Amino acid sequence: MQNELSKATKLTYNHVHLTSFSVMKVNLAAQVLSRSVGLVIEEYGGEAATETAKFIKLVDRFFDCLNVRSLYEGERKRKPDLMPYTSVDDPRFQFLTEDFLGYLRDLKDQVDNRQGFSKTEKSKMFLSYQSKAVVEATKYLIQHGVKFVLTNKFCQDPVEEHFGRHRALGRRSDNPTVFEFGYQENKLRLQRSLALQIKPNGNVKRSSKQYEIEIDDTPLKKKRRNKTSTEAC
Image 1 (tube, rainbow, N blue to C red):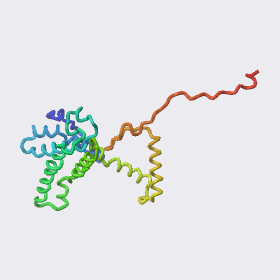
Image 2 (image 1 turned 180 degrees about the vertical axis):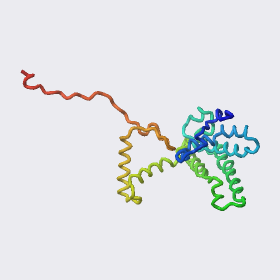
Image 3 (image 1 turned 60 degrees about the horizontal axis):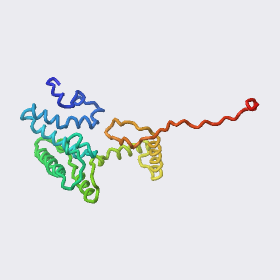
Image 4 (image 1 turned 90 degrees about the vertical axis):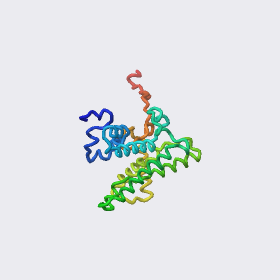
């Protein structure tokens, strides 16, 4: 902030000084591990920060490849990595399986060869690589007639949120029967059908059309009042 480099990125005080709540926010991590931050570090960090800048730019592209959520977002933002997957020969598959995973494998080898650290400490020094499943699932769908694939739909956060609601309803009962689970499921469906749409603040983004309710403001028909005997006279 003193060097005014914050103008080239979205970084703020909150990105560096985290709280017990903000450490769970994915958007803060994504903004730190962004291409703009990588370019700034590459330009002003010197030779010692070269690998850090490379890591940040790789992770930024990895995020984009696995966060395709719209048919036109890639065109609007001019980012090819956000375009929908339509071919099994998409070059992003090579990036995910060879470039990105290859980088992580080299990182793991370097960590394993480090001396003076326990196995537990070494396990915290590298990332787990799980993008092969996304690549194979995307290729499978395209090969079996799917016109395009949006990788953002593979996110498991909505499933975790749904079963979290089940655990909340079950309270101390952590092993419900089929009947109890079905009763809770019907209860959740009823709640969602009656609930007004609320903009989420967490990591899960709900569809804008998922909980829409049409409100009709047409006046109700008035009940015809019977005339009293006095009025009739």
